[in-house]
Length: 320
Length: 129
Image (cartoon, rainbow over all chains, first blue to last red; front, side, top):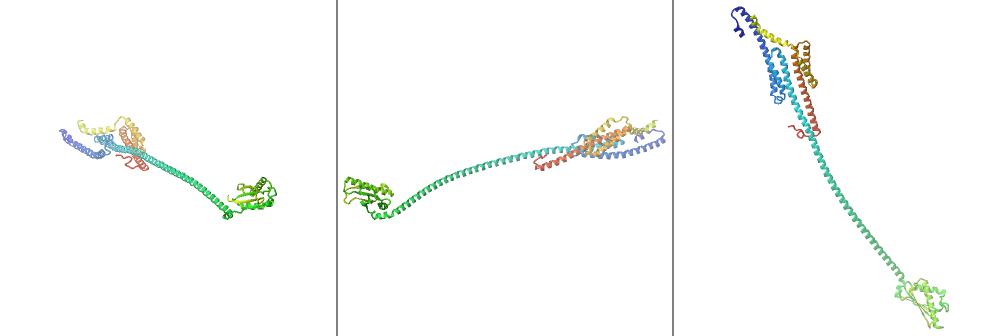
């Protein structure tokens, strides 16, 4: 409109004035629309500018999508230079570009978080495996200690067993000893018993011979004389009737007394033959006594001749 | 003539400038291809799961752009192709974000579970800083 004023030519002023007025009115109208449009443009621009600034200033997201932010900036810059008709189009584009920048920055942020979580995942597994290894090591150590303790226990038990066995052996040795001692004691007892038995027997013998030993204080039985009639005449054979007398003599001799047999011949006839007969007669008596059970050693025989007393046999006793 | 030129020059300039936008003669083939490719990339990146709304917006823009192309309205098709690219890129970025969030949540849960299973103290296994 200023241009119009300055450029107005001189002449045709009326026509010009009306034309000028029309033109001015039209221009004003257009500018009014433009102003309204410009104001709306400014609102859109301010809104988008603010949104983009907010993203750029964001401490976390601001640096994560530089390319997308640059594209949004470019789109926003175009918004200021474009005409009204294209305005909506560029607003749409700029809105999208800013949203893309936001979404991209957020996605990058999440992807970084994902990386950290991945690393954390690995670290958890590592920690777990390390802990497992540690547990295995501890378990191993425990088992080692246990087996050690077990070995010690085994040793101890073995030692105990050894000791027990030794003791058993000792005990059995002692038992042997005791057995031996017992055997010895038994032997001793046997011996003593035998001794006692012997003593008893002796006592019994003594008792049995008690009748004689007592009369021992009293003299042994006196000599028994068997007369000439005890024998067949001129012979050395005892008559059967004399047998009873022989038994009496044997009883008188007892268990231990020594028996002397003296056979006396008479002086009729040859002395020599008499002596021989006397001896034979003595031996016959001895034989008869031995036949009753008296030991031959306990009997001694003597033949004597030339006696006035006639033919006879004297049996006498003596101690041993 | 001079008058006309003089008075109508701003109006003429205005008209020309507005008309140029509609009268781009060349079909934006490269932009259309790029837009389709980016929508496909977003789809492959999991946008159907993680950014379905953003993907649908991009697909709608692409459909509009294609319709304009069929009408040979290249002046409308070109900005729509641009918008499709931006929308597809946003779907892709949101899919990436959704996927990353899901993975982070899953792994955080797994780590916590693992830690409790193995009874590892937080400071013992995986102190991050």
